[in-house]
Image (cartoon, rainbow, N blue to C red; front, top):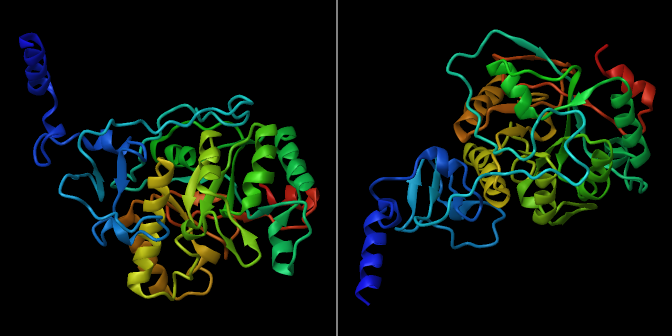
Length: 355
């Protein structure tokens, strides 16, 4: 009995202080940023409490007195095991085109204090649907690449020695001089449609390619109009297969015309919820319909550009009005993309790529 008491006392004395206190010896920000969804709850950055996160299943998400505030808008419960953000490689082996190691912890990215005067040439393609089911509307037809068409496009990339990479790799190359493979190219998918999981993912795996998926957080697992969207488990499968997750806001509103409070929530809550549920950094945003950069005024553009970095993003994906493969490191929130349209034959697809 005496020996047991001595062991208990020894454990209490040697245990880290932060397991018992919410005010001293906080775990480092590096460790908390690496925590998984069970260990870290993502709160809003310098604004609304966590129960304002749109689309969360529970409304009882306010910060408790036992939470430890760490870093920018993040808090973790004391005593939880800190889990690394790991992305397991898929069964077909590592991506053929990418030097990205899918079993590596994903650190949070940070823009340098001084943005370099550098231009990086990497085409970023924009997809929506991949499906062989006949499109129900003219709009969906224009957004839908067939399964056979998508396979033909990936085959073309392989035959012409393109290498698919992730946006975080482009970021590391642009700001830290990290090497990229020859003929790098990024594949992005907007909206998070169900066929991205049922149709696009198996084809990506077949060709050992990687892609980035921009998710509308409030639509996850739902059917909106004629479109069905991926579920949380399906999104987690994308992550475990080496894919990258980005934000496409909460519910796909025009960021150029919404009130300021709504704009903040669209930027903040989508990223928070995606990070919480998937346990990976979400630091790139695709502006819905490319707004306000297509039809908005300068003031609306500047309002969005000033807020995006405040909520932890390091890059923004455009949808027009310019089609380019050149990216200016001084403009990280204006990364141009090349739209891939439905019905586009392989010759048109090839012509859209840089020589």
